[in-house]
Length: 357
Image 1 (cartoon, helix red, strand yellow):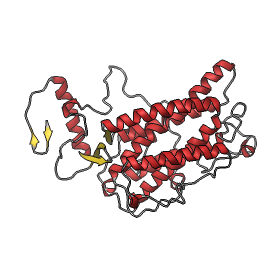
Image 2 (image 1 turned 90 degrees about the vertical axis):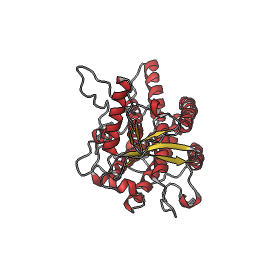
Image 3 (image 1 turned 45 degrees about the vertical axis):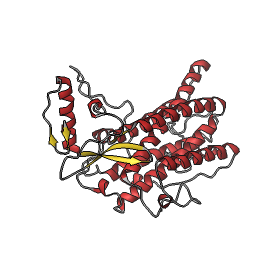
Image 4 (image 1 turned 30 degrees about the vertical axis):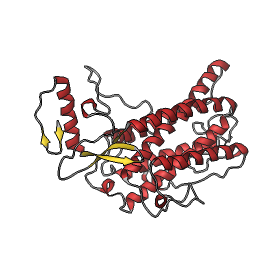
């Protein structure tokens, strides 16, 4: 068993020995795991250490019950399984051009969606331990990123994991309900289903990436289960009754996501997140493979640039879908136009219906 004082000789079962060996190899390659407390949410975060192997700390799971986050099950014939939806990719210029943006509410449904997102953001800040000095200008909640005090790497990881565990729900709900409606109505969906399911898949890849960097404790797992149950059922009912409000809600939610990742990128660039700026900090292999990140572009800042661009695309797509006729209009992001190039999903406030239909 690995500890701060060295290696204690024990004779575990063969299966346990294999797991411990794999675990030790991962620890030696990526660094040790330190405890990361935040408002009752404790995660085990991968942080590079140059001097010694620190003890493996994890909030509620005993060490003998730990296992690899994503252990690969060996098979006699299959080497790897590629993503079902390969990532479309962005240029560095496109990713750097992404900035926080806000679509002003115009209708009653816009205001309802906006207020729900702001309410959720308020409690998110509370439970992740954000103090007053770490908060930004309330008069510009989705565009201002300046704050007197930065968040820590541990606080950011908690926010990332919780955000991505929720963000993968709306696309699945919308895609599922539109799929079932297409079967009942015996007609085409005009390209909405694939876009919504791909969005959900992309958000899950964000979560899997961060889950290789930290493992939540029991308290956060309970919060995720509860939030997902409430979120799924609420969105299910809302999408059946008035799907436009759901797309507008997701658009505002993605505005918050772009704001979150922009602020974390700025704190890395300003040197306030030293652990993520160290040259030996390794991002997960799953991220390198999914985004096809080239050599020399595999820092934590680069990873967050890719993820922020994804969130910006979801922001533009959902704001646009919220402007369309939900029953008749085709999905303009997968359509071939007569007189223009394909739409750019990174547009902050989306497109109006008259401009694309």
